[in-house]
Length: 261
Image (cartoon, rainbow, N blue to C red; front, side, top):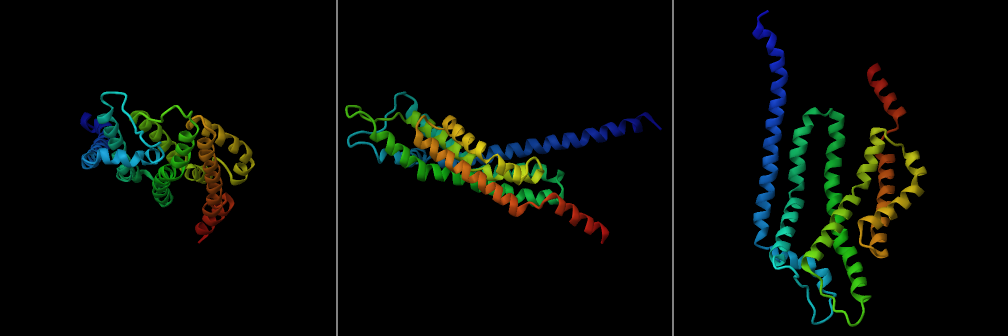
């Protein structure tokens, strides 16, 4: 055997790695391009988008007051930051599609059948969490904050502070609404059982309120509005695990029957 033939196995091992890296780079470039295109399409409406985002607060401000900018650059960078974050959020389905296209060839067929519904559901649940925060949580907490202040203090929130506040809540509720997917994955992979998750219900409820305290502003309303959905979504994940995931004994029996056939 020649020296060239002896080197071929190493080259064959390096080529797949190089091809995977090239594909990964191409998909990352596509992700960045779609985010950039969405951002450019939205940037013209940046101020309108910020006005829509701030509507739950501005509708509750006392007459004669408005939001303010305490930094010289805030009137530009606050809408700019909002538009960039919104572009990423809107591009999430395309980004996940690119990630799926990269990892799908390495999955088994039954894993693909399970992964696709979970991927779609995770996108929907994240958007549902953001919508829940905007439509339900914001009016309640802003109504509370604007009504408990001293009479001689005018509520005039800084636009950058407001943006950071609402983005924090958006991501907190978006991630929290992924709990059913995480719970279902724990059951599906065998890392946890339905009975075990039910036994830990009391600890989970306490943990939900602790996380609600850490992820939200220091007020009981927003903490409760985050903790209660977390608990209910945890129960939903257990229910989905009961309905969608077969017990291991049944799975083994079905596989044995197919093997006998």
